[in-house]
Amino acid sequence: MTESPSVLRIGGVEINRGSALESARSYLSRRDRFGYPAYDSFGSEGGPWQISDADFVAPVLLNAEMNSRTFYALAAIRPHLERWLVDIPLDARLVEAGPTELARLGELFAVLDSDDLPVNARGSILAKVMHRKRPAFIPLYDRFVDYCYRGTDDAPISRDRKRTWQEFLPMLGQAIITDLRDGREFFAEVAALATRPVITPLRALDIVAWHAGRSHIGPAIWAAATPSDAGDPSDGDDLPSIDPDDETP
Image 1 (cartoon, rainbow, N blue to C red):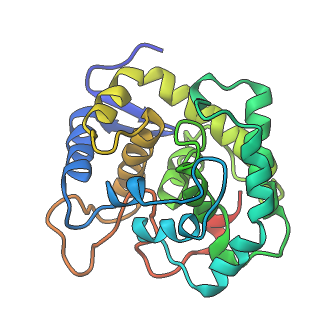
Image 2 (cartoon, rainbow, N blue to C red):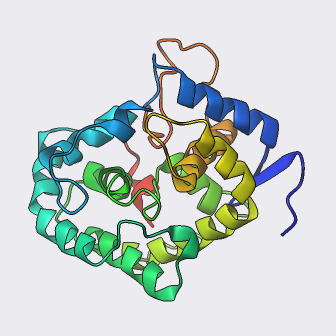
């Protein structure tokens, strides 16, 4: 697909490239309201192969809603998460993934297909916990990213309440791959804005997708913060509670 000089497409949403770049620049340079670099550099004694308690609370740095019940629910699935990490190379990249790798992404999120976890420990939280372990492979996910890929008339993924998380994540991964490839130069430019710590093009896409989705279904928040508009990319949950409909694949 030929890239337009002025328009960037994220799922089914088209946004102005200049606006998207400036939004990302604001997110990556400010230290008064957004999650970078706090989330990306937050310590984890578990390293890349284990999930520490700190990893379970890292989503808070993206303003995600967490509580003790969520923490204990996530801790209960720690063995599943660590078994999954064993088979995923540190340098795994979603943009290079084929059917086998996408299926593995579905296997990670398959743990959500039971009713054992509370609503606020579902897809968006699990993605925030695991993204830092394989930041070029595991996409971040929230209601605004979801809007880009499922919510618009031109979205690449249809809504289907019968679809499982294990079925949904490979579909989401494939749609994101398309955008990463079509916008590779742009996302490389966004990623280059972050130096301490560095981020991947996949993280860059999340920042831009959050902005794109929020621009369509919520108030713009990239100007100066006010008490009512504080929020953060990869969260989308600056609204105080999570709508269960946003957590259905």
